[in-house]
Image (tube, rainbow, N blue to C red; front, side):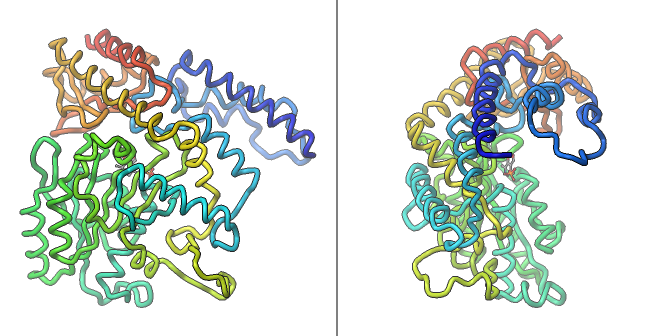
Length: 463
Ligand code: PLP
């Protein structure tokens, strides 16, 4: 492809993309098709000779579009959102054109320095203390893995990477049942073993880890010969938005010399609004925390912001410097590949720059505040209807609800009726042992009317 064709097709793609988004609300949110249907539309072997890209947009419309679940749809109320605002799409395009590989400062001084600055802008927006330093990870799962590896190495006095875990004391990590499964995975991958993830009971309306039980578990483990290594707390757990009381549990971690990590993958974005920061009061004592601007801040996937109170332990765990990666003689810079599991990294900071420049913190706050208010209004509408039971009250914009008296089979059928209808998309969850509708407002395209319509759909299909 020559650059004239690139420019022509690039402009056509921008026009096609704008049209897709202008009409996205008319489409069913979730792809109504059977597994294998998308693949069947393609030739099953690759072209021997290049065909060029003429007609590619028509082919996308025919083959790909019917197979999309529309994450940017205004009535996407499932999972957590994966917002991609127009500025972040353009930024990703720009980053793709520059095609940087930002593993070292030397391999992309601009990529590195803009990453440092953007994460500092975001730190200020979140109200985190000066001194916290950030790095962009591809996902919250990667940030949590990096934190768990740090817990392991710190507890083993840095012997694990070199000698492996054979013959070492059995490590223990502590978390509640409300944390995301990425914590379990991190513990498997780190070789610590899922049996050594100690689940601490929760209490209170926010389903927060009991700090007394946490301390007791750590002490009992020490007496039994285990080696307590770390604590993973959550602000805005996936199922119901559970929030640990960070002041309490991080104090226990500090007293017991455990490395602490806070998963705020979804709720962290809301902390740009000062009024929501009570949900993570005490965060300044965390060793490590992660939030996903790719969820609720409009920054196109992939973009997880991982903050460290002091990156020293993380870098000591992950840095590996063969001769060809050394950048002799250049002091005063960061090589971010030493802060993450993958070596290679894209110029992801471009996306946060575009989004902050386009909306400003105040523009982003307005979106999040609306979502929280509309979600809380909907919970009240459903409560007032009389046929629904709010199982967990809204935490920010997430609540769970069920049809009063319905058993699990009836609830699963209800969720399927809602999603087959196509006007809205929700996910089911299991809360307090029962199947519930898990409802969150988070799409940047959503309006109040979309949330009101969601209530009407839920009521009309309640049976
Ligand atoms: N933590 C929480 C609380 C989540 O809700 C999720 C995903 O929804 C994750 C972690 C994993 O996020 P990622 O896909 O960025 O790994």
